[in-house]
Image (cartoon, rainbow, N blue to C red):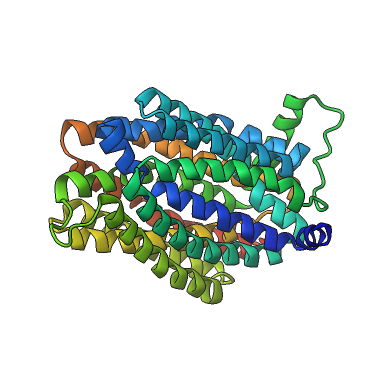
Length: 421
């Protein structure tokens, strides 16, 4: 056993891929049925559904950068372990207490836990294997995540048919088990803490944050990608929280074949995950190392595809048409996130602020969700879910010119004689 653990610890890229695989399996397990659980067991209305997301993202907004800075100062490994302990406790709580207050509290705890892992995972693997190998690890991990999602979705369909809370509970227990295993398999030899030994904790945080701001100023592409995060956040809360209730309450499930609700949504997610495997492989092989000018058009096109897909879901009167759009939206979002992460990672020339920059991207997304989520939820309850989803789609459209401007500004920056890595 000792020899096996040493061998695993010698392959940080394999550990990162395995971590991503396990987390993706557990999240797929929970997310396949959690919205159904909220509607049919907890009894939440559309506004409450979206407010859960606002609570989650509010916690992320408050803690994202501080925990990212702590990861840069004290280490990524401890940050990741703490994050998954909190995440596991949150999922256990909402599965065992089907009340709005419990689910809301769980969202806040999960949000804090997420901030401990967000940015720290990417920074950890980049520290251990270097930025170039890290880009390949990101893509391989995304592929592993897609395969794991298939397994998680299938398990959710089986467990959800028994009890809608069961997949959420298994997710929480699995997170806690993983947090306990990480000290045995995760090494941390490449971490170099920021040199702030002469400063107090909060002074060190402020100085590291100022270094991140300086990076964004000298590399404009970083700033534009952070702005894109805000726009993505504006639309995503409405879609993520409302598409499943919309299909349940407005479109309706097919009369034949007669299947449990969890099975229908498990099938939709499974097909989307299978398509995502191919999309991620194509992205890794053909697009991951593309020049910035090519990436801007790919990202803009993918964003347009997501907008069109959400509009189809919102306006479709057929379950099959809406389900087809949901199936396509998933891989487009996954590919976009992969390309944006890799693009951002290769702009960072100061490894001591890597986790902070990735955390700032997460915080930008949270700002968008906190701003856009309650308004979309109110619109869904006051008027209709289809109108709220339509507005969500329109909120994403500004990201198209933002990606195009990012590429153009970066090209100008290169032309002026500056290197962007």
